[in-house]
Image (cartoon, rainbow, N blue to C red; front, side, top):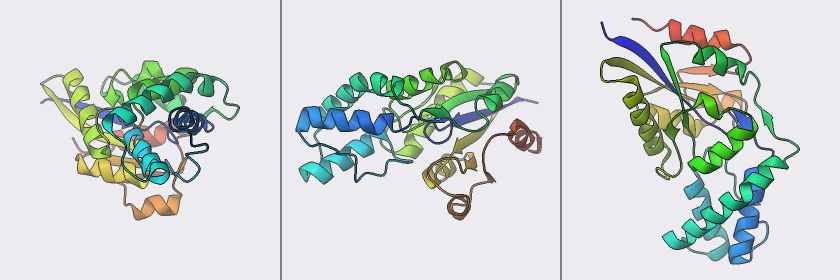
Length: 233
């Protein structure tokens, strides 16, 4: 019988941590530096969106058009230059309830592989995770740099995780996130979805997205562990 492996991709913002607005501040400053528009993120609601999609929304709102690949690349590079100072100086940065306890419990299991499934480009995600000392839990992932489409970036993360699991493993895919976009994209990848109401969407809103499982938060590691153990062999 093949070895079962639970391959779990975690979203970052609103699921693992809140940066206290550091990402939005860095994007505001980057857009102002390059295109002269202040407060460019004021009308953008970023939760659940990918970095490339957020950048294009900024271009449409403030330049009245799509940004070129060269412009989007410059914006993202400038954002990544500014982000570390914004994260380091954020007074409201904090880990979400239950983090890192639930990650410790999962990492201790031989049948679990942890990865990221986030709309952040990887350097941005790693910068945020570094302040919370979380990078060591996540050796791989799918990121906004893989695709502007959330389902496609999750698929990239799952492929990397499956390579780590090995050819003989029977992989169960999981997505843990805090928005309906995480649920929809996870379902498109054939993953079991766990929604947590710690970020962008309420419990009621998440319930309407019909995740496989729904929790208020991850304070009790046993809640998630019991979901893994409750699957039929």
